[in-house]
Length: 397
Length: 205
Image 1 (cartoon, chains in turn green, cyan):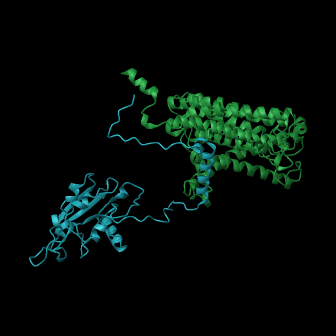
Image 2 (cartoon, each protein chain N blue to C red; image 1 turned 90 degrees about the horizontal axis):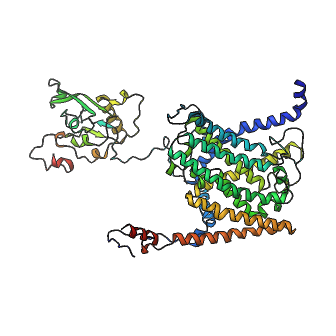
Image 3 (cartoon, rainbow over the protein chains, first blue to last red; image 1 turned 60 degrees about the vertical axis):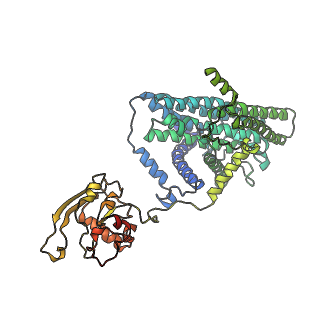
């Protein structure tokens, strides 16, 4: 046994180290993302935000954490106790499990000894696994809503279910283009294919895919423009109405982990991962170069996180039919069009930057949707109610 | 069929949706720009409360005080008007005859032996102040009333008089005092040589 451990130790400790890093960083990150979000929300709304605990309020996150952990654990009488407890845990487990194949630093495509910035390097179905696992997180929410044994929580869970199913499709469609061009599902390979010039970053030749991917990924995280499962005004919190204290924290940790996952995916798949002008070469092994690349990747990820937060404070929530319409009438056709263009370009061996013109589809699509929207909204009020309603009242009389 | 329009109901026209707004993305970009503009403009409207205190208007109805007259005695004549007027029953007065032998009290008949106000029960309506014929009880602009126990916030006569001392020393007299319109009973008995009663509340006393 000892011999076996000694034998596998060189490949075991980097994995354990990476798991340790993720397990240590993610909860802290969750706390601090809430802090940053509160600060940013305050700045957007011309306030100051938390600034009392510690310098610039930096310890506010820790104070919040302590407070939430020490709260009384109340269990409502009417919940299904087992599911009630399993739901947040499941939610967090799936959210963190998706991080297994995610590089949080430069990872070479070939196997190396020593510490690697990923838990499981060289998984050939990397991106598939990630999407599969992260869509499992719908279970956490559905279980939570069901276990709460409460109408509104159940509504939240049902909405979340419909939303996840709808947005999985454009999410997958948008990534297929990149996978087809790279020829690999391995995230490290997708990133290293974007090395060299900045123009090799996927965003510059698949802008449409980025739009579709980012929108549907945002919907998967249940963040504000798409936070129908938990909208406070209609569903009083939705699936987490009955949860408090640490169980609530775990739900939110899962949500913020999702935000981080989505930001990492966006940075890795579309913005060149750890590549940057001047840092374009293959991954070198010197510590400085590695740290610099990690810094570049983390900066890109933070920018995406901040962008997601800004979106939260700029956009109103969708109505549910608008949400479904956006997925089925907007994003899925756009994703299919993008996929078609990628297929044509790859088959005919055209230069891949021709694909940048797929961005035109966005304009065409938004013009069509704008026409629809104007037709439905800009009806003159003076004509009274819409014709169908009038007929209904007449027949009722 | 046109619906009959009521004359009392005014239909507001919704603003028409323009092309750019209907195209989602330009509107989203516009919204983001607005948000960013607010992030980078540093004029937060938050007041840093414990350091920067708000300016309380002088007619604010805060913690009570019991006024003193010129000789430093409590102005209250223990007439129970405030206790009767109080809708929250938070004032409790026990009256006592003024010590007649004492030259200091010789012009007074009654004085409050105890005067307690339960500040937690008070609803700060100001009716005690209106009822008081001698303007002895007043509401100051002290708003940050805190304590560790309920008992601590039942103010007795000494506490209420000390609030008078504090506020008058700090120049934070309520505007009702500054107006100088005191009740008729607080003044020296009018003689024929004196003019009409002072304006304000005195006129209906």
